[in-house]
Image 1 (cartoon, rainbow, N blue to C red):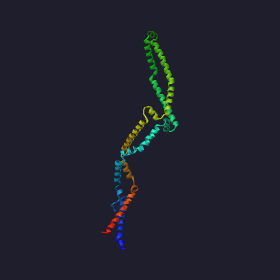
Image 2: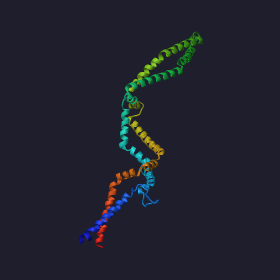
Image 3: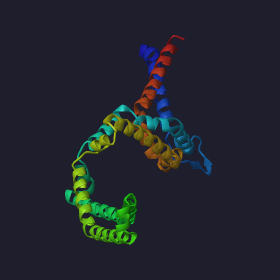
Image 4: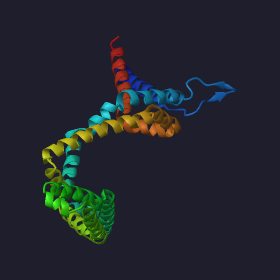
Length: 296
């Protein structure tokens, strides 16, 4: 009995005291959730440390997230890594290497819708080209230039110049001009439609990469331009988003809107093992101090 009292009981008491001291200290981080009063006087250490400093914690967390954890460089860096960037670029290149008709059908919703869009585009293009031809006033150009050329040729020969008078030239070229205008009005829309429809249909069977190659841009050049455009877009988008969104305020408001119970659950989910280790460490320290007292 004396052995138990002298050698075993002090370390056990030290361990129990250390354990419960740290246990109470950890619990007091959250409890009580609200301020307690007796006869109107606030009881010390109420509410718990975290409920009492919740507003300061929210502001500090918001500031840390904004300044250290959620910076433009960090977000852009994540989006510009090879693991994120390359699959996106490869996907864009694969789309550019598919026939325009297939990609257009997907974007339009169905091949039928794409055909309707194509037909509307052909009609619009035909109208624009026809209007441009009319604005060029080709019959008048032919009449005036033809008359000028005939007069120049006639002036080189005296006999011809006597037979081919200005009135005759004007009359002939006027007739030619009128016939040409009638031909354009009657035939041009159909001819333009046939050529336009053929070219647009042929273009639909080509790929965007083929079209770009015909314009002098090889696939590697196109790929480099897409990469550059993607990187610039990411930086600009992230920068714009961070200017519009006050991350610190969002985090602060989110924490302030949480109840103490929710905040406690969140902290415990992250630090439950560490807090338990602190409690157990208190027991170990108490055990050591109790054991040392045996020999003092």
